Structure formats: C-alpha cells, structure tokens
Length: 199
Image (cartoon, rainbow, N blue to C red; front, side, top):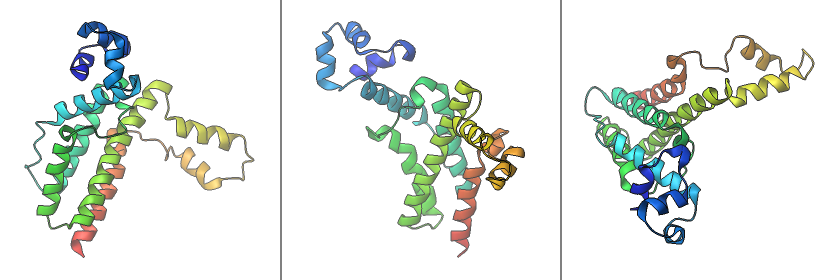
C-alpha cells in the first residue's frame, strides 16, 4: 500500500509525509515499514521498472537481438523516470527479475553455460543502468561529470603530462556523441559473447 500510494505522487514532491497523508495515517505508520525516503524512492523506482519491463518480449530474433532489446528497454524505462533512475541500488522483488530471467533463458538456449550467462546478464544490466545514469548526469550538468573532471585535471597539468588522455579528449573519445556510441559497451559485451560461443 505504501509503495502504491507513493507511485501516485509526483517524484519531485515525494515525501514520507505525503504518502502518510494520501493513506490517511500517521507518518510513524510509514516509517514502521520503510526506513526512510531513500528506501521508499528505491522501492518506487524498482516497482516502476518492473511494471514497464513486465511485457518485454525477448523471444524474437537471435540472442544478440534479445540482449539489445533488454538493454534498450531497461535504459529507456529508467530515462522515463529520471528522478528515480539514480536510486535503484537493490532488487526488492521478483518483478525486476522477470525480464532478466527471460534474457538468461535466451542465453542458455544459445548454448552459454551458467557461469557465462551469469556474468553476461550482470554486464548487460550494468551497461543499461550506467548508460541511463550517464545520460541523466549529462542532462543535469551539460556534460558527464567524470569527463568534466578529467578535462579539469588535465587542464591543470603541463601539456606533456597525460598525453594519451589528452589525445582521447581532443578527439572527444571520452564522450558519447550519439545513441550508437552509447551502446559501444553493449557491442563489446556481445562481441565477447560471440567469441566465447565460437570457442
């Protein structure tokens, strides 16, 4: 009930008191079940993610298509709830795991063993979540903060220091320039899996 009520509240105005008011209970009744706003926000984000991914169909195409479909859907879902996307740190229930289970099934069907499938699913999920985070941070700050930090640090050093990093910065090699570039990590994971399959 707490999570359902919280999901009806605009994320920018979500508070424990707002949930208590919506449910017609004292705030202490909320904190008895939820430790604080951070936990509640993470639960709401996970519930939103689970709902949006519930109907994700990974049965079409080859396993590479399934990997891409899962990663794109997870990232795009997180981007639709930007104030919540940055707070998912734990997996509170099975809803979020159902599409992961479907992806693992596609990888098993392709012949990958349990160890490879486990690492692959973890890496693919990380790429999707990190991609969403990077996009949201760039929207907020105008540039991904890590890239901005690298530029600042390099700018404070002599021109002959960190020359290889300067070379990447000069070519914008540290910044994704298009949606395709943002999936470079995913392409690497797929290529690695293809290499494993070929062996």
